[in-house]
Length: 547
Ligand SMILES: *[C@@H]1O[C@H](CO)[C@@H](O)[C@H](O)[C@H]1NC(C)=O
Ligand SMILES: *[C@@H]1O[C@H](CO)[C@@H](O)[C@H](O)[C@H]1NC(C)=O
Ligand SMILES: *[C@H]1O[C@H](CO)[C@@H](O)[C@H](O)[C@H]1NC(C)=O
Image (cartoon, rainbow, N blue to C red):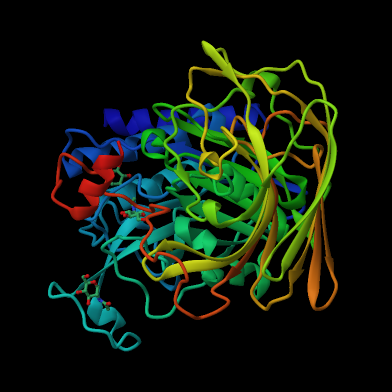
């Protein structure tokens, strides 16, 4: 009897507390909803799979019932931070409208962590999105998938699961763009879309998907979805594809709301979470260095009405205290940077320059004016300053074997000396950055050929690995029929840039084989993090070498 009473007492207390503070779920009439994204550091050393999952599940529940999460309507957890391929679970199809929590006392086909998290969504009255490794009996799928099944009669998927406020599974997405993972893919890509009781329709996908047309861009361009949920374990690459930079660029370029939750493992390169309100910029975003965190980031998110955001809020700009060079994140470098048509910018504290550069059919212009600055960043023992190149590139870039995008880029980017090979590199952490000038005017324009599959994005990065906000940068895109005229311009002077320009993704525009090396490991999605349990894996060895 006692535990039962204790439970009732606790949940009553919680009910009283919710009323006393006037906390209420958002509804259809509200102009906002409250979202939380979780940056989550997985455990992986010296524990059994069972212990790992138990620790992760407990930590998820602690976050969901924390005071910080109290007002949230929807909470997103990142990729690869719950279970692993050694302890997979069945996941009910949304059509079945199953509430795993209610099956807790019956012998159920669902693993206990799925049931526990369904109960946590239910107890806390929130929509909850998690990513897990799912199993499915091939027989369930045989009618629509003619491919041969594995010998154990199971398909294994990397899956996002959405619970509603009752703990019911209302949406499921099986990742289609898998990255060196031993996972199955669905025969046809899935477009996972769900509606909420606060009147917002969401679609969701996973990590590496963000760089591809299907399903990510298609959900926006063809399905008209304006609210996107993105779970990731994303490995940042300088100078254009660090995590928060890409998240904000993508949300701004598409003018959609993006809720992005990142796994936190900076030593190997994974970090980056945020909530973005399309062309209104970041409502909250974080890039974590060193050891990583387990932290929920909450924002009041304005809803979209038609094509524009309701009551555009002025996003909080970060305080100067955080404008420190970011440290402790392992970074990849854009392997195409050496192939840009580029020019070193000869700038001092009172320069006025204008440059025009082309690469194949893409021509871009740069106008820059500089002024003096007294700022410095960091407190290292030596001091140095970045130089800048203006570069233009069109062509293919690879992410992994047989996966690539056609991109077109016009941008300035920081280099540690006057050589091309120093671009995209950062000074060591014991360096104080002493800029020799600030840009008081910086404008880049380009004309980008139209294409059926195309996303043109503003792309900026500062020394602390955040993007510039709409108060600091103006972005314009004009449809001229055969081309788009894109322009990006500074609104306030800046002396802490790592990148600034226009990034266009033409996806797999030309269906020819990649022009450049085809097996560059660029973005590692989903890594075997369960080291210590099952270490014998080629991928593991590769990752291990990274540490
Ligand atoms: C399952 O059983 C426990 C105690 O035996 C009880 O507290 C709980 O409410 C039950 N859950 C459901 C969903 O019936
Ligand atoms: C799923 O993956 C397994 C293991 O890689 C493979 O043997 C099987 O053929 C795949 N199933 C389908 C339907 O692709
Ligand atoms: C989520 O994503 C990754 C793959 O990208 C997968 O390996 C992992 O098993 C999935 N789930 C969890 C919770 O680990």
